Image (cartoon, rainbow, N blue to C red; front, side):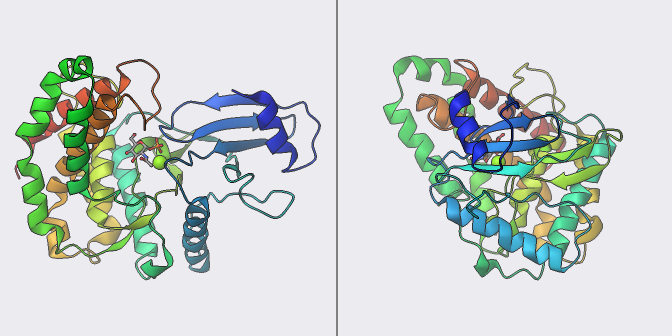
Length: 341
Ligand code: GN1
Ligand code: MG
């Protein structure tokens, strides 16, 4: 952590005495996030990974367009937007931004109750309900090809060709499981054309929900709007399934059942609470498939990165991406046992 660099960014935000503390928050896989705290205030400072988010102005614009729409409709929850620097900009030196810190909130890395899953799905459904008349043309895709599953497979195959032998050996079992499950993609391709394009969050994992500190089942805000994009709402539901049915952390690779059918049912109920009337029949009929395909694609993404030598996701230990892959594949296996297609 480069304290001097962080201090200089913060000095361009507001004139404060230098006596603030900097603490790195470690949960994100792409950006670097810090909690900045002095006697009076707390802020969240973030260094955007500009290798991944190449056009920072696009993501900023997307966030403000969606925020404006929600505010105009009196959306009843908190909205996290970047704050302005002293020069009036939202981004400092093309990669730094600052957010308000919402007091009395808490994040979780894994689900702790079925009610929590239900409430989160209801909250995401409500977000979508408010955005149903949002003009999607106002959004610029933040990461080209993010939702192109065919391209994910292509990148996986390419990584198999270029990977170091040792990595390929380490991941032999996982590579095989990915290859054995390719028919999931064929099933998805049969419906993909029929799915309407909507504005989606594209990263509604549990750590992107701010919960009330005192009430573990009350949500204060859905955060991390960097991946707001045009796509199928089934991706949002699927990613939520990926996160909220998993009884273990995303990188816990222990090979016991990590899938909760109860949570899955609660997610469906919660998601449809505000969306029953809004979703098409194809969307409603494919909620199970959405869960499986997003878990499968996430496994592919982690494994591809492992084979490429960990270029994309932040890692904390050498085989972290393989462990994440194993956790996703374990979830997929258990989902397949309990959910029919
Ligand atoms: C990444 O950076 P973070 O933790 O918000 C990733 C998501 C993955 C997620 C897996 C831009 O999100 O797509 O689902 O990790 N974000 C990007 O935990 O690739
Ligand atoms: Mg994210």
